[in-house]
Length: 401
Image (cartoon, rainbow, N blue to C red; front, top):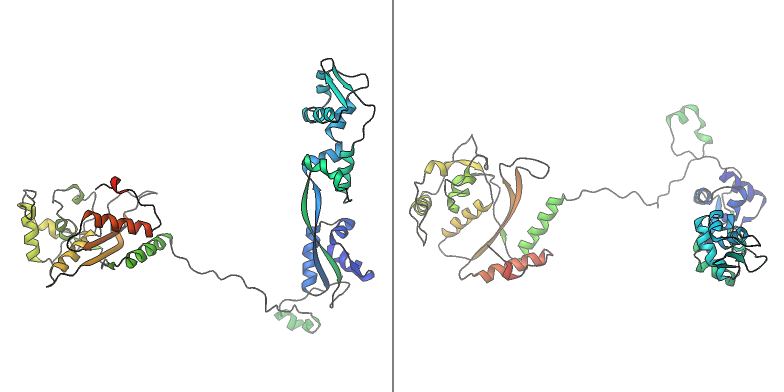
């Protein structure tokens, strides 16, 4: 209907000067008319020039006053010439009309509210508020000074109004023929493809954005932390061995063999292969000696250390097992070189799986090997790391171990 109205009007008229007025005259919503205008313009059937003008519109309260009259006039009409008791007047009008109407009617000196009741101070009143609101609603121009009270009472609002001026385009037709978008097998079989009008391809039209892959949130965080470590001069440790021996996972870190963390309730032990075949024997002897008797300033745990416990294979419970390997490897070098190592990888714990816990998680670890390091160096590295991560660093005096 909208398309027929536009094309039919332009067949006998030179132009449609205002699409808003045209939509109102034919009884069509302008948003529906606008979509048709854009389609006709795309096919060059009409030439549409867009314009924008600002206009006053009624708010909900203003629409009510335009229909029923302003509250002060409603209240004035409810007051008879001989006057009325205040309580009776409250029963005759709605609470909102009494509240707003009495305020404005007294302000305009139309009525007087006293102890004896409510009485008129004038014989007749004119509802200019309703008149102005109806004029605005009908699209008529209202003088600026007459708008002052309407604006102060927030009965109207100023909004931009978009419209179009329409003229016949270079491909104007009184009735549009639907263009075919595809040449089908049926068209070829019937032979009617010769009479079809095909839709032109718009080769300059924007295509749909290509959906590309995104990093998974955990990998995104891992990538950010890895970049920070590399910027701080760390190098990554080889953490591709998820299966570890109890020696490197526990014993080399001097965790006693009777520690609860070695229980099957906390750690996944392997059945096949159940034990490791390769351990540095010289280092195993030193670790055994420290566990049993102590050394290097330690008194040890004073228990019988068992090799078979150290040989058990498990899914590593922390990446610190890799750190222990790297320290041992570093100690085998002929000359000592300071090193900074880091790792970010999966570890495994025998946890009860629920919506907030899994049997595996990621551990972030950093290791600095050098001579003369102090607690101040540790705090400085931590402060630098968290600053690069975008987190406020906690005061040193609250740092605990």
